[in-house]
Image 1 (spheres, one colour):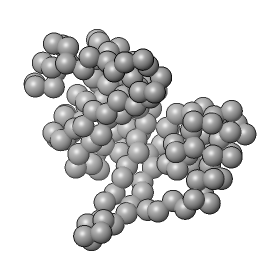
Image 2 (spheres, helix red, strand yellow; image 1 turned 180 degrees about the vertical axis):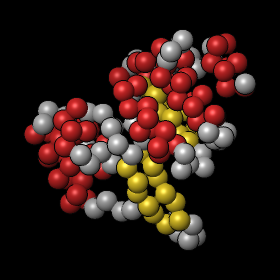
Image 3 (cartoon, one colour; image 1 turned 120 degrees about the horizontal axis):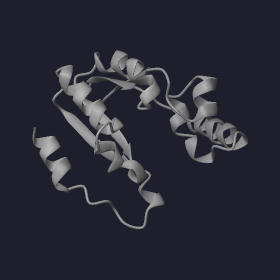
Length: 143
């Protein structure tokens, strides 16, 4: 589970060489050259680590892009809980009709996964945090 500073330095260098400077952390899990070139997760990646108390944790990084929903499902069927990562710039759009965030959460629920965390990334790209308490999202999460 540990990624050495040497590996992270290599990821940073290689990502910068491809014009994807901010992708160095994604490259820990996006191992395929096609994923790295396109900047999207395509296949499910599995990584393991053990906590200091001895609990073995398995992370499944599944794609979020609409073209790879079948691959996302392959990862999701193995999960006990989920963390859905949403881009801050598309956060509201993700909950509109046909939105990817909404679809992924519905699919997770259909698979029996009820413990779902929705995290917002790329917060450094906006001046202020989005209002995540709007009525449509509140009712969606209560359902």
